[in-house]
Image 1: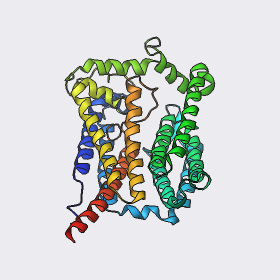
Image 2 (image 1 turned 90 degrees about the horizontal axis):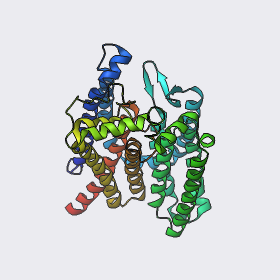
Image 3 (image 1 turned 45 degrees about the horizontal axis):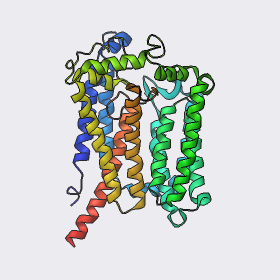
Image 4 (image 1 turned 180 degrees about the vertical axis):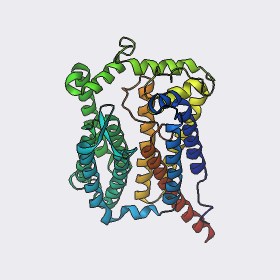
Length: 382
């Protein structure tokens, strides 16, 4: 009965996508690995392979760990305190990379704590709103406490500055609230306030970029607004990405045949991995990656709709929206639809912490699906 309730498609698709990501990291990082580490052209490849191995074991554990334990009252307060303390510690003692303080350096390895906070916040939001079902429409009691925690985390992440991750956390948390059972009029009011804030911020950012953003963020914003006018400066990354994507056409130039990875395109194995995929495998390769990511997101939404437990449903929505919006932010930056934020493409880009936490998140999704399907099979058997 246990093995019958496993959703094997949600095991196979992420694993295949992650393996493809490791192969593409090898292809994309050949030049940068040699440039940074001499003859060790497999540096990034070997590290991502280690992270993939850890991620698979973590996935197996969390896929078999009952998700209902996460809604324990004992975990809520320590989780909130832990998330805030971790973010403060990152700001004070973290390692600066590309102008942002997002990482802790542990020997030769780096860890990105905000990835843990992303998942922790979704667990917290789903747990809190599950316990507030009796008075879910009371804004002061049901909405304000978790929103205050959310804003504290988001503001601390924005100070790093890591605006992409902050935006992902806001959107994922909003979808948790949307699926909490709150009255639609209250949600519409919350959405209207959020849209006014976003529009006001966007207007101020366009008029006064130097005031709103740090120097690095200002350059990225200018590169987004005027990529070809600033091709040799702020728009260099965006233009390089668009050239790589356009060069691939329908079927690509062939595996390991990219030219943009040879110093023309920054961050080829992290932020820009989709541009290298587009150059080497063309539209077909990009479509395959998007199909796999879309499958995972839609599967998460389907699991949420089938789950009768409000906590499990909100947790599935939070996880799937996090993966989906993170992919959207990454792809938006690489295609000049959004400013480049440094957000990686889930399961594909180089980044051990991100890969492991994504596998943990999908493992939780599999467990929610297994628990739901197991109950259905038991009901049919009886």
